Amino acid sequence: MLLPSIDNGKDYTTATFKSTRIVNFQSVEVCRKRELELMIQHRFGDVNGGINSFWGLDNGSSIRIGLGYSYDGRLEFGIGRTSYEKMLDGYVKYRLLRQTVDNGMPISLTLFGGTFCTTQQDPDASLNGFNKYHYVADRLSYCFQPIIARKFSKKLSLQFSPSYIHYNMAINITDKNDVLSFGFAGRYKFNKRMAVTAEYGLKYNSYTAQKYYNTIGIGWDIETGGHVFQMILTNSSGIVEPQFLPHTLTRWQNGGFRIGFNISRAFNL
Image (cartoon, rainbow, N blue to C red; front, side):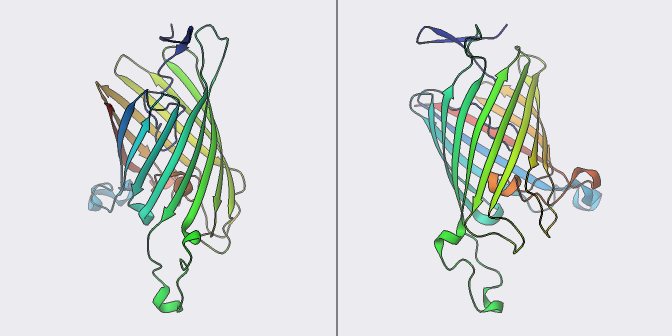
């Protein structure tokens, strides 16, 4: 039985996903009405370092701290800062369609758009005699996603999210300025407090001299009141879309994945 939420005379399904993130992917969810969400996302180093790096826990880590807010429970604005590539981000999510209990609307659809700006310095500027980030526009990248999901039962939810990413300046000379990716994700709830999540991002136009891999993530969600704590494993160092969707450099097969966590805390304003 799906849990209903009554709005405008309709019974809507709730908690298709418990958080606004799955592992790295955006979920179909947005903040509730007049809710402020604080999210901390943390990734350690690769586990293939073994005991010498304590399976990646001693290595350098990636951290994102972000805020998201919705006044009406449909339109969400957010900002964040990621230590990896010193990336600033701003985004908008809009819940366009919402699944109903009677299947009059069988899916939920949320639109996501983000702008990303790296603030890191060009490490080769003094050697090359020029700064590749001379223009602010060269630091910018963008992502757009329609996020489609369905809650099949109180335990199982599935999601599909095609992505279009544009870089004003490609990282490597053989990289593409425009990248397409197809995201698949799911959630299975074991009991009232715990669920497992998984996600897979398939790149469409992936040819480049630099070898990149598809992003894969697995998570374990623990609900604790106003908190959602997610323990995760992922092969991506990056945390925001222009980082992990096209430019994941390691793969699971040789231990190129890392431990991490997401913590979200909701505040009613």
